Image (cartoon, rainbow, N blue to C red; front, side):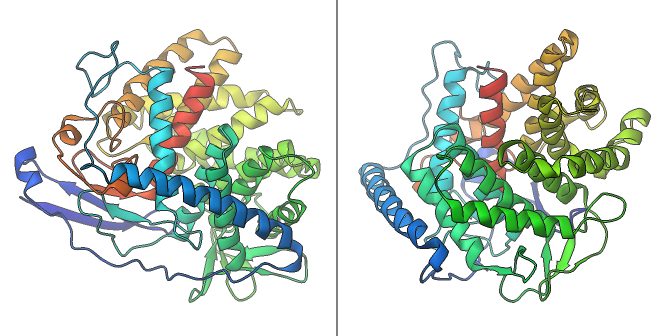
Length: 461
């Protein structure tokens, strides 16, 4: 068996590993261990208490954690009674087709339930997440990404907003506490992430923690969690200090002072824009409206306009795609002045994703793309562009159907997953990064579960 490991760096500076295995049989794969186990880079940090402003929050977290522990113990005892098997029974309307079967609300509900269990099982007691794990062996790879840790927290908050529960509430509160423990407050009433041993921070991580707070608080009574609302305002205030003269944002800041520096990033710019727009719409921060409009226009011109017009498969456009699409849907739905063009802009961007970037021809997991495509579908419906809506729906059904078959223990397992006799039970519900690749990265499942939530909300209502 030949294995090639490619290591590179994304546009936003995050180390990336692409594991590609060239053709060999499924039988051979089952006889091979693909990677040497590593140990987690993130150390465990005990959160030993809450500040005075978070005392009530700490008590609620302890109560929610107890409920979660009882629930997880019951689930674990049930699972351990038998060897974990992949479910191969198909819904009656699906027949034996598994790779790109016809999706339904029922299948998406089942997939989301499994994915939620995986995210909760992947969260460690301190609030961060197991980042990269081999589902066949339970081995953990050594690499780590604080941005993707923050993204996993946001994913859990989105699930909680979609269907609140004691388990998801406890998980989100635990994750927020982890980032609070590793943040620094300034005399300007701003707050930024400062992780031990690092000299610089990523603006995207701050934006994703802010998004987690926004979507968690949307699911909770307005009068509760005043300390968290203040914390959100501090993160937002910090993001505004990173704004450049071109209306985009520094991708980096000094961990010692929080001072922004360097170029912008299409990933982080999109994440920050989405956080600011959502804060303006759902967190009472109407004062952010003008900044949102200015930055959205600047980012459209920088990352979208030329690539779409000239049909260029630009890396920056791919990096901005889902974040920009989600932000543009929020802008259009806000009905603020001058936001009407964002429907057509998002639709054009999704035509680019399908026709130029070739999302359906990609061999790795592309769940991030369906976060954006579903937004474009919704906008096409809203402006009565039925041809675009039909094209987007067919693409979503085919692509998300394939990716759903890559979910461990999911409702429509691929041939590879059906052939697996047993696996680490804590990995059930995780999603493969590529077909026949047993390594599960936390952000892959996070992106796919958000795509599933959006598909349930707008496509399979």
